[in-house]
Image (cartoon, rainbow, N blue to C red):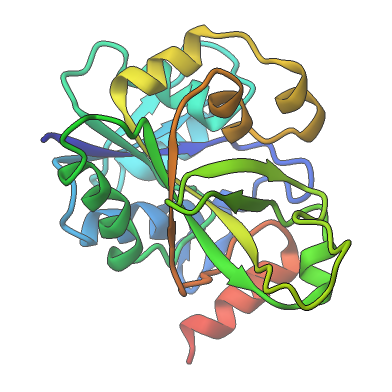
Length: 243
């Protein structure tokens, strides 16, 4: 089973423009993310896929592998799909470019899903973290996921799901972490299929898979990590480096 990691990397970011090129302890955020993915030793190849000459040069001048996107893309999955279309691979793992503390255990968990999936029932696997903080649960920037009793995703939302209509029934809340492992065929289907209303409304790309009947196996992890979405996140990341 040939597995590669792809790191989609846009230079523009609405909340924190140029965040991937910000300094984090003497290296840029995107270079730290690339090196972290490489250091896991889980992948046949690791690539950064970008629309930016600056990011492309940052990776290649440090001996890494980068691919320039040929056209504009709405989301990371589309950017990756264009890059892997002609590649001979089985599993493609999307590693977020703004997570410089990407670690081996979580990535290994999503890859393991496919090794035991003899019926090829699973189209993609992703991660979720149990959350209890009320503010985080209500925060629309925190994407929540609900799953069935086998761990397959039922829905993703920026709203509070499940809604606490009844209390003390044992419902848990899970935050979706944006690490995906795709079968290549599922990724290419995503690329060719148009966005439908639920994805357009929530602005969550994982919903497209559900709308077209794909099966997403969610894996619980306890590793929160730090996603660098704001300058405050970058300061937290700097503090973690110095711990």
